[in-house]
Amino acid sequence: MGLLEGKVVLVTGGGRGVGRCIALDAAREGARVLVNDLGGDETGRGGELGPAQSVVDEIKAMGGQARADGHSIADWKEAQLIVQHALDAFGRLDGVVNNAGILRDRIFHKMMPEDFDDVVKVHLQGYYYVSRAAADPFRKQNGGAFVHMTSTSGLVGNFGQANYAAAKLGVAGLSKSIALDMQRFRVRSNCIAPFAWTRLVGTIPAETPEEKKRVEGLKKLEPEKISSFAVALLSDAAEHVNGQIFGTRANEIFLFSQPRPIRSVHAADGWTASAVVERAFPAMQASFYPLQRSGDVFAWDPI
Image (cartoon, rainbow, N blue to C red; front, top):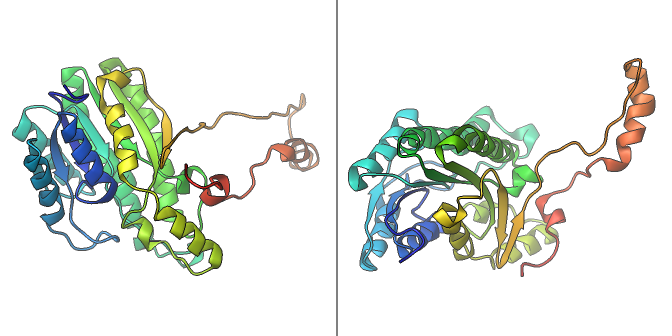
């Protein structure tokens, strides 16, 4: 028996890339899968059911059970229809993988409001919509698992991705809140920051020699390397894993730190602005974080 035998899993953005691999791996481990994918391009425009149906056909060819869904996670009512589709098709829902995403990369001082709003609408509000729709069946059955895709663009930083970084760091906060609020119902919520060559990553600009080298390195990162970790988080064997942020890159698995105080200063008579400048900033400066990008922190070749 597989790790997900008898379970029903919903994968958003399951028609291509990382989502497709997760859907296929979940099916191999015995899950019945609802493959949700709007079928749009990298920016979220357009849409058709073909990518999701193609994955469903692959799952059925291997003897599994799956259904295709083309609703948008970025709409509250459609997100509810996605979850209801899983319940109608399979009678229950045990796991949700929030993986769908779009990119509208642009340097901050040239980023337009619609580019910011649309990315946040999918990555943050969309993840909330789907998770909130799944919360009720999870609570009623006293169990369930969420896996949300975050990104080092938000956890660490990157150029030209203020919209994406804001949304993905928000996903980490959303996941932690779900874990705290729903632990009494045996519902778990964790994040993965994946490193993989996908359609979205393929839109990263590669103009300088450094950028071209980074992109060539990313091309070697297979999305299949991520799916097994996501499936493990969905399984009952991970019932003790909750509220964590992980990263996966090739054969590496990372556990990320979460913000905690690292240094403090105290003034018995309170602080004035001048005292902060003269005493607080100098005392803390040695512990300031440098302005680094994801590639600066993960500077070694994937293992």
